[in-house]
Length: 283
Image (cartoon, rainbow, N blue to C red):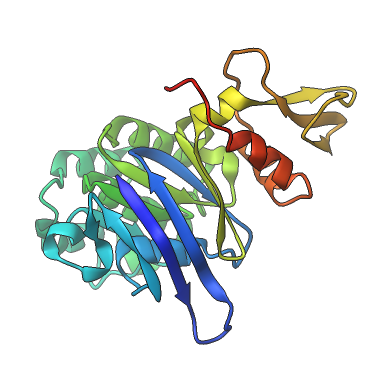
């Protein structure tokens, strides 16, 4: 279990809090992290990884503070930024010197991931395009088998086929005891995989909720005319995409982009009041 307790961090410039009093309990599974530019998403990921010392509060993985950077904790966490650099020519050279610190690294998974991306692992990383570099790094970090994997825009630069391969890798290799947090602006790339939604805005946490719980409380619908009773509505391609109370008793698909838009609109308080209502049902 990943636990954030009143976590705050402020950069010297600008003076606004990049992360401001964030508290949440994030269970195992694959979670989508959304927020506008400057919302504090990357800072939050770095705090989770123990790469930044919080000004206050803490981030705990099974009760251990990630900021203390103990080997017992660090070997369980990996943060992949969107601009990762490695000190070797290729990813296989990096794996030789780096993977020994991660006891769950699986070389067979690494080889399979590379093959699915059409790579050998001997490519000169410095000469690769953005998308090819991302594929190289993703093939490796997914094979590390860490308990907490933090990915910042992992699909950036990937083509359609590579995004499909990434979905397959995550679905196949992420176990039930692992936690993956994916920060991205392209919500649809891995939509089928998300077990939870985390939304940040201006350094504050707006929502941290399992997908099944969202789906049980609200429905995301598309209709040719506006529904009479709605929490939020947006018009797109001639259709009215709306969030309504789920009074059917059946879970529905979650439109993450629509939920995010609602949380950044005047409808936010109404939506949060419904999502934060205690539910009698448990997954």
